[in-house]
Amino acid sequence: MERNAIAVLSRVTPDDIVQNGPARIVSISAAPFHRCFDAGQDARRVVFGVQTQVSGTNGQIVRAETAPILRAGEETSIVASYDGAVARILVNGRLYGRQNTAAAGCSMAELCDSAVPLGWARLGATTLIMLYAFRWRSRWQALVIAFVARAGALMAPRLSK
Image (cartoon, helix red, strand yellow):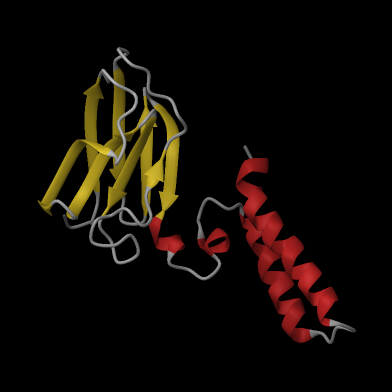
């Protein structure tokens, strides 16, 4: 509680992979739509939401989720954790879902996320400085540079793996 962090461990064997909503696996809540945290099943995906100012009182506006990995009748170990900024979902010991809830409240979330390599973040910051510091012949030049920098920041986590 001091660190505003939580880790939830569960071992589940889904009978049905058509659950939606998500169907709760582990949850602590004051009411049906006022959850402190919720680890659940949404079809074959695992979702994890934590109540923060950015994610809302139900923890579902910004949440971590996995690819469709659950299988009916197969036992799965799930660790859902939140460290005060980043929600993570590990399935059978492997990271499948990650969401930086602190960065989601940022106007340029990709550059605020600590998972973005420093070089890409510097490129984005340099581009923004250039947009303000230099006179461009047209707004189109500035927009193209801003678009390329934004696309680079979005693709950076995928390229760095």
